[in-house]
Image (tube, rainbow, N blue to C red; front, top):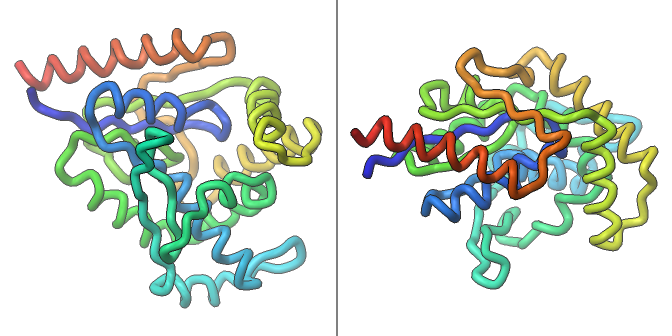
Length: 232
């Protein structure tokens, strides 16, 4: 059976990664979390004093990009691939609210996007991949057989993100998480390079009132229909 490319875009905290992981595992496809790649670059910038609340040394970050190596290593115990930054597992560190506060700014940098998009396209060159992010269907895989665009209300997304962070033990408030979600929406949607937009041929999934199971079953059905179409 022929394999296809599945591109999942959408706003932050819409559950893109969760459904993409489940879908890839069910189909036997490779899963790539493009957002984690931008988060890893963000963490590098934070660790090296290139970005903080007062300044952003964009040119210095661009110059250091060749020194940033991002890789994914599958963790059998967890059932998904974890992110490594220059050989160090940073899966937990890149998911903090602090990284979330800077990631959209980092992702708006042309040099960063150019480098990571090239890596993402290489990862998916043989198809059989599920990739989620902000510009997968509009920039990375414009010819993807199945494109999805995930959305939900900002308040609903903030609740989900807040509960996730609290469960991890992070000390956060709902108000801070909501502000982060709203700020990221604005930056992602208005940036000059590869802004977050719904591809013309993408199917919109509003999961504001869907359970994880309902969402997965709906998307799996769409995927199976596309796979059948391209395998006949």
